[in-house]
Image (cartoon, rainbow over all chains, first blue to last red; front, side, top):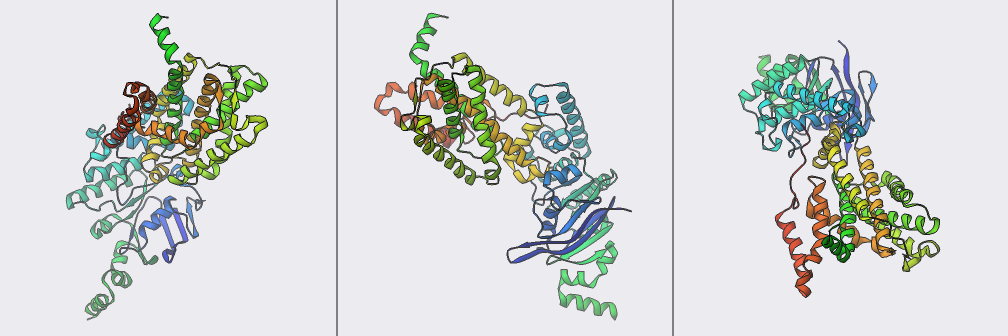
Amino acid sequence: MTTLLTASKLTKQFTGLLAVNEVDVAVEAGSVHGIIGPNGAGKTTLFNLISGLLPPTSGSLTLDGRDITAAAPYERTRLGVARTFQNIRMFSDMTVIENVMTGMHTRLEYSGVAALFRLPAFRRGERAAKERATELLEFVNLAGKARSRSGDLSYGDQRRLEIARALAGDPRLLLLDEPAAGMNPTETRDLATLLRQVGQRDITLLLVEHNMGFVMDLCDRITVLNFGRKIAEGTPRQVRDDPSVIEAYLGTKVAERLAKAHGA
Amino acid sequence: MAEWLDDFLFTYENLVHALGVHGLLALSMYCVMAVGQLSLGQAAFMGIGAYTGALLTLNLGLPFWLVLPLSALAPALVALVIGGPTLRLSGVYLAISTIALGEVLRVLYINAEWLTGGALGLSGIPRKADLWLIYLLLLIGVVAFWAVGRSKIGRAMEAMREDEAVAGVMGVNLPRYKLGALIVSSMIAGLAGCLSSHSNSFIGPNEYGFEMAVTILSFALLGGIGTPVAPVIGAIILTALPEVLRPLQDFRLVFNGLIIVIAVLFLPRGVIPFRLRRAP
């Protein structure tokens, strides 16, 4: 196994708050890696650092051996990083298929001149983009709604559209920020199936999620954050039994009681 | 040409010129607003084009086919220089700094009397901007924006307008798009300036200040920015309205204002609210 993404001593200091404090994470290529932690643990900040929306205070990030610490978001996209957002951020006036085609921005090579004069390069590019977008919409089960205004879609549909839009950039690493938030158990199960299929497409998944059943079921490895620090890392089983994780989630008293109960 | 058309053009020549020039200015405003930026520098770019064109014609006697592109180039160079620092700003801060550009240039025009004629401006500019040329350029502008709008570039621009951070995550090179839009918009405004100076025969330093900047912005606000034609229609309405309302005499400005207020209140997306489809 090779490492696709490495964060070393990654730190983000907001005025008066260390949101991410010297976090080391190594994401194996082809794996599903989860990041969990109580609210305010720094999970979304970590995602913003990885996708380039925030510059780190210190530390470094490498993607496939290449230093991307200072790269702009669009450069990271070109190198194969894609993401979804915790609070869905759709281009809501666009149609569903336009959203997906916007996600292909870096993969469409034709020039502005080709677009202006409708040259063959433009027509070929757009035709291929449309076909690929239709495929992706079929993959996430939204083919029938390609021409709907994306802001009018139901919540679950918008979540899946956001995944299709992220996949449109042919990413190697897909960051999913709470993909199951607000979903009912059936939708969550369908999402897990969908994400397994994404994983089979040679895409590495890094996801933040609060739904423990979902995370434990899907992930190969889990990193636990609390107050911006990494407090545990390992397989789902290792993490579940880690006393410091139990303490972070349930508090010191419960953790002690549990430890006693197990000891007795 | 039919006789009535001749009569009409004779009576309303200035208005018909102004409609075309304002249409181009509306397009230049559209170009910036389409990427979600707010610039109040379009009047300043227009002024640079107007002065460049007038000076090249009056002092060097260059032919008009050469004056016109040079008048687009001059504001583009200024846009390139100010683009670097100002595009780090967003929203209202970019607007404020571009107002400053207009004021700096106004003071410059007034004080560089040896070149610009100072407060008296430049007069006796030959009328070389034919009507067909103005409207041909306007048509090319609208068609070009339409064509580019229906491509990955148009999608990227709309994405920036809706959510800039997400557009960046989609792989849009934000600084490049912002600078590109500012430069193209400054070139169109420069063309408009050159065309207006070569149809009015006079230009002065106070024509390209804050008031003109706000007028250009209102073209886009009234017309909308969903399609490239929308701001042009906004410009036509705002330019023609005072003439159409002339029979109302003293109440003209009251009605003029009232119509604009009603339009903005009830049509927040402009009088042409449709958006350009960006996928087949």
